[in-house]
Image 1: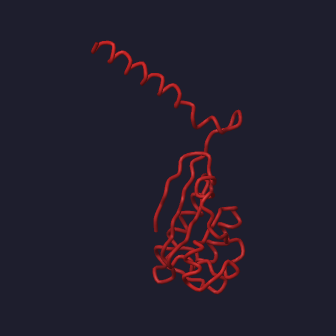
Image 2 (image 1 turned 180 degrees about the vertical axis):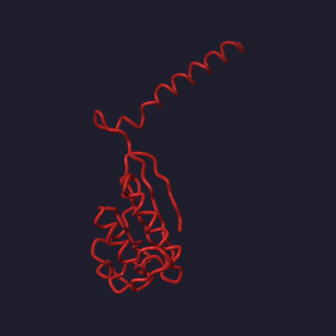
Image 3 (image 1 turned 135 degrees about the vertical axis):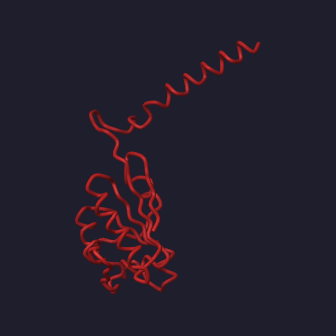
Length: 151
């Protein structure tokens, strides 16, 4: 009985591995390879310029070869408002310059709708090119794995 159980367990393992080995390629067209995505979360604003500018800089760099989505919440929404200050820190490009670059690169930059409301702001207060967050986009912005970086 132990041999039969061991045999069945081994057979199930082989079947499971076989069924899942091509899972990523099921959604790709012939000849395409999946592209991993980087989800960058920014929850700070101009009170911590190093943190914000490092995150934006990372997004700009990663967008050269990866799918990138930038999500701003809590104090982070203050960075993407029309009237937000253009701040700088150390050697990093300014906040507005990096946001413009991300939009030119067609990177999705989203602000939390609940955080906008909590700050007394509406989607009309966002800079051009900045979107209100949509939960489905968190999963649909890339065809590969998703790596999250939190600032």
